[in-house]
Length: 361
Image 1 (cartoon, rainbow, N blue to C red):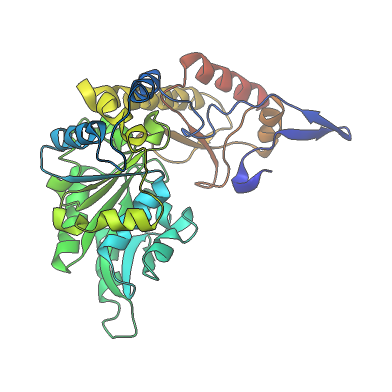
Image 2 (image 1 turned 90 degrees about the vertical axis):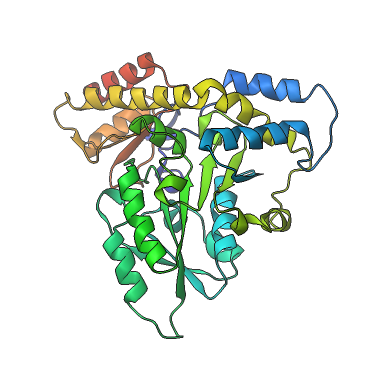
């Protein structure tokens, strides 16, 4: 096995090493390339000289595109990675003696290598249970009221992933319930939206309805999984929380000197609902895959397919056959195989995977 449960590139067959041509289509939506319109935007941004460190007109256009999308005067910053977006956003909400309440399977808990604690100089993550990867408002209450003495890190924020690590999506009313508990206890609310576009596309609601209107203070809006190269947006709906965020970005090595190459994709992606079209396609491919798996005896689907992820438990012998056929997917998430669809996933690729799964079983 490769690290993190990704099926290996080589196998051993009758004592001999056999190399296989890997197919990463369903390993992650990070394995896809750049969307063609993103590529064109980067080429256009390369054709002229302009101010550096975000003082250029492209970055201004990108920020304005976010304000139009969210229908509010939000404050927007751009960083290279989702880890930086989540960790710096949470650090801006907390002091080192504070704590952040999150689901036990949230991305910040399971996949950030301690970055939220590192960038906040020690803020502790308090994990809670919840069905289908979703944080339970009652669990937030419990975490806050568990202790009030000075020996316990004071809860200061709540963070959750939408979609969750199990591919489920929070509805606006669920976010409102979380926000109401948070407000009652003086907590700020952060959404990890690495696949925010997939959530909005799945629900058919507005970006505003799923964020600040439901009580979210800060959003990490993922661009990489939308077909961008290395651009994540941190959106502060409560602008006072982001007053010194630029300093955090600089200190953390996240202030790009040629910022226009981080921001050029955003006006294109957000224009005329392109971001939703891209996400809707990925979601549709996931539904196609799920529908096919439902018809294969021996496959157990694990969680609802609400965005662009499909989780299934296959017979152990099937993994070896699929490995030999070249398929790559993760096994360490969600107690089964995770198949992730992206903007570039094609129907014939879904059908080819289904064919091989049927053969493997």
